[in-house]
Amino acid sequence: VQLQASGGGLVQAGGSLRLSCTAYGHFFSKYGLGWFRQAPGKERELVALITRSGAGSNYAEDVKGRFTVSRDNAQNTVYLQMNSLKLEDTGVYYCAADGSPSGTTFRGEYEYEYWGQGTLVTVSS
Image (cartoon, rainbow, N blue to C red; front, side):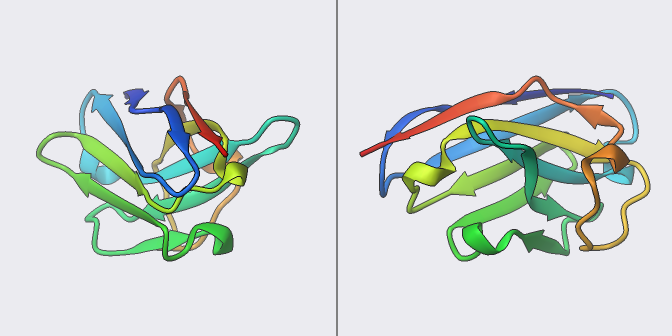
């Protein structure tokens, strides 16, 4: 499975962006999907995940109520809608696929088998 993320860019604080990640390969719906963020000088962290069917999702505390993850299995695409963006949301965002997801439980990045190339989100004041 190859993942290609897009949609990053420069946005003012309080604004919105929608990231997309399209998968090329088979059996997209067998994977749980996550969005990770790596802020400058920090470790990569999971900010949102969505289950195989799309029925379940989970979020890091600092993005709850602002970010929404969704997926379209017919289009092999996962989305991350980011609203009310803050300066601290700046970073490179990666989509990743987990072949053995555990529902909506956050798992370590080493559990994710396939990764997109990352897309840069810069939030300015």
